[in-house]
Length: 349
Image 1 (cartoon, rainbow, N blue to C red):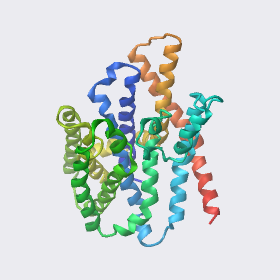
Image 2: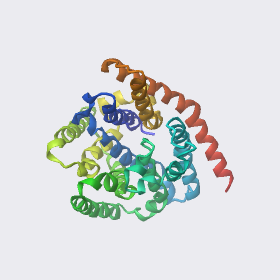
Image 3: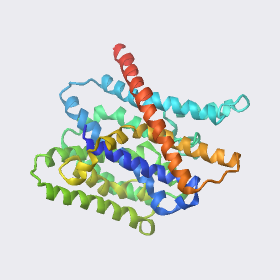
Image 4: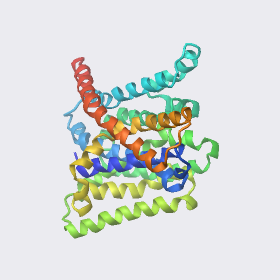
């Protein structure tokens, strides 16, 4: 595993957290916070890179079967997804005796991560959960064993992405405002190019890591990559329509950040290699699935008891609770469940 990229997961998870804090206080309705949805694009591209990093050569050399790969992916995403979905359904009274039929109609697609394929908010956001992105990941994971062989030649992958780079913005421009979220933000087919970008990055990584970079040069590149990302991020509100910012607008800055930090040769990489930041990256999956629960629970409690707590207390409190629960989830549920599910699925071969 590349420690710097693991640590970056924490920072982008915090950006997603900030994007959702507007429900706590209107101060978070500004662009600098709400643009945090870019964290989702980061995770999709990172997923393509890391999956290729861990499995591309193994697939090419037939060292890992498709079934074993899929078992590992199911074990990774499903246990915590099922737990959080059931928790939301029960706590939110989504499956009440009087409304069970309507609730079940949405629960079953969400359970099998099919809900983001339905371009309607009452499906992909029905349970108020970010699990729609797992539906995208599920598609990527299903296709990867085939993609690893089909895109063995990087020219083929680069050509495919070049076609996407032309076709995606054109199709986005033809989509009316009311449908852009359903068609371009949550739709797994629309987010598929993000994953391909990550796969191509792995090909570039194989070339770049053989190059000799001094500590000073690598540090300049790292600072430059961060500055470029921030430039794209901060300048986007008035210049770029939101539909492009959902994915393709951020391909270049995110890719540069991932590629340069994957080399782990500069002073920012040394900071990101700190073990506590790496742990933060390790718990980012739990953090991602849990954080919206905590935010919405806080808002509901505040309304119920008519309690108005200062923003400078409420947000740190919500963040601390989320991090604490994420640590517990990662250590005592996510990792053990991962091992158990993999053992069960691999025994069935």
